[in-house]
Image (cartoon, rainbow over all chains, first blue to last red; front, side):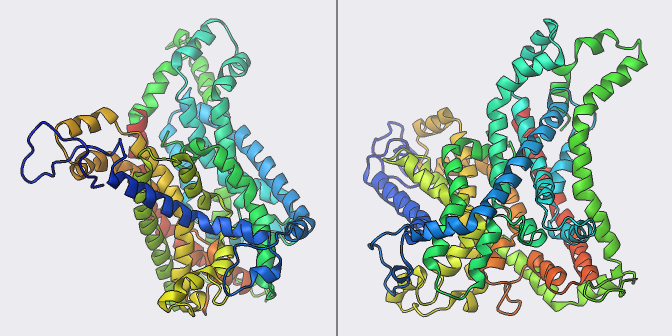
Length: 295
Length: 318
């Protein structure tokens, strides 16, 4: 961050220090322009694969396989149409697993977060520790018995298994996140409501839910992202009837044919819901990804 | 640590509890259950779905059991564990896990920090640049891996070799010659935005007035960065490393999609190798024992990490 001085400081500085003032916040200098150009260059590099994915999805396969990558071509919707025809059952499964697990997570996590923040139980720290530690256990450690048990009860390739597993996967994040939101409710608000003789249901309906609605929405968003993108359980515990969108994408590595355009269209459509949701909710994303630690 | 629990406890003390204080044990106990009640469904659910299967993993790990040889199941004690420690592929996979996790966390942290610093200053189109930079993280990991394998790393038609042709590297088959590097590149692309977002939030939570005060006092940008920004950023950096490591150590999607652990087992990490043993070798006992070893390793690392995350939270909420 060595920006050249744009203003001079009155105070004489010690010889070892560079005599520069903070043009950091002001920009406009030559250094500032250089940083701006650098930032934009990096942004374009990072975004390029996404841009290329979307662009290739509009090509026909002949345009996708050229030694010199083609930027201009006659766009076609064929690939997207093909993908939509093929992938609809997978998308329905993903939608069901994502929606149902997210609703379940919120229903379980909201009361738990309440018990851990507004009216804390004894050993609150231990319980929080337990929840987060389940998130740290490697999934591979449980996949073998899950496969055996689920197989024994005849539930392989059943969407309900996915719903239960995704609920368990997202529950710790949701508990931590919602707790951080509930802790922000001023104690006086609840006390005032209780003094007025409002019962638990009333307090929830008229005080808690309205105040925490943005927090619930942010939590749900994070759960949706993780459930929609989940692959490990889906590829191991589903076969065809309840396979989700990521499993559909596996089909493209098995085939040796020329499918760049179609797989790009498929990757674009598979990513689209989460990309759009993430763009809209950038702020909530930070809080969710840090499990509520960063506001 | 206790301050977090006590602060809300004090404000949460309900009128009912205050009235019955010291007079009626029953009221107290009911109050206790009123508090515990809302917690129980989530707690019970988490225990059943996450802890119970692990007990089975422990149990299976003491058995010789291959799914393709019915009737072969028998108790063998710690034989599976001895096999695991003698297995050079397992050690290779453990090493790959360390390389992938360490390399990816470190590189994406450094690039993420640079990007966060660059974004923490006003310039034209800042919102758009930020949106573009977070997008790789939002792309479905399986889709991202598929893209890197095909449209990016393809030896003939991929963008990477097209870009590298002018400097004479245009014929490299990345996925067979440098599978680990290729996987790390794809992962860094996916995880740098995550690091950037967390670190940017940290930068923006800095006390602006102390930065300005430092400037007025004649501190240069480097000096301000070292003595004010970096200490402030410490817990954000720690948190980013910890959370990034939790997710990246479990990497499965990229290896499955890009290299299938190959060539041979050159790029298999532990999750992928255990998956292979369980679902391609059908060796339940071995896979379970490996799972247990991985969990023990994770617990050791995670205990240190958890202490850290708790310090962060206590500082945040107190």
